[in-house]
Length: 352
Image (cartoon, rainbow, N blue to C red; front, side, top):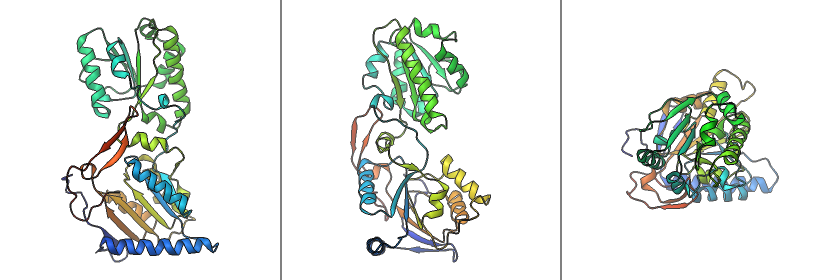
């Protein structure tokens, strides 16, 4: 919130003149309404209107997601995209949430398996509960992933999926731990849904859960718990029909609009690098507009984006940070959380 990189004034940047023009919200909205009016009339008269590509980050409140949904249904020239691929099955909540009764299960369990997750940084409350249970004794924590300090002792068996596969098949020594365990707990995170092999990986974890339930001494059924590390991740996951931004989106859009986005995500970095390598030789984007709506700017990556895709004008809309804006989110357990504004916004910043 007090970072020197925080941008609190809207501006229009012209690549050719390298000039920053300060704009008022009144003037901005007037231009937006004129553009919308003109685009709608083009559409009604069967001309092909300019498309506006909107890429939305996952730290977005439910209110904003609903507004964007209404906007894309009302005007077909708005295209909604997400920055990274998420192959997520949202048919059942247990497939992508943490069990709401997990606290009691931790108290009654003697074994916990962490799969590619660091609860110390991704979910500190969960880490505190695991630590509290560990200090009581008779609680073994097995970890598959990188060597990390969780503030309590754990057994790291691998960071290789082949070992995980052998665990699922029953060809690993640690299978005996689950056979002799009581109420074993399995925890992973949403990063597994961003993998190219996420479908096979999640199937493997579901088989592991099924086999643990079959051979565990306890009668209680355990499920795979998915930890969401960011506040808006669950609500964003429920919005399941979002496509991932691709090179053809950059090629066909006349306006590219990033909302709450980080340009350091792997997918956008890949698109930038491909463009700089002249991968899109047939794309000729002239007089296109880049709009960013965020509280900060990643200047190096922004410069790459504007240079690589010939985005002549850059319009920045400063939005509020977490403590300056109210909103509704769904937490990793599936409960709705309503947040209130704590601090008055500064400068020209507005909420999304």
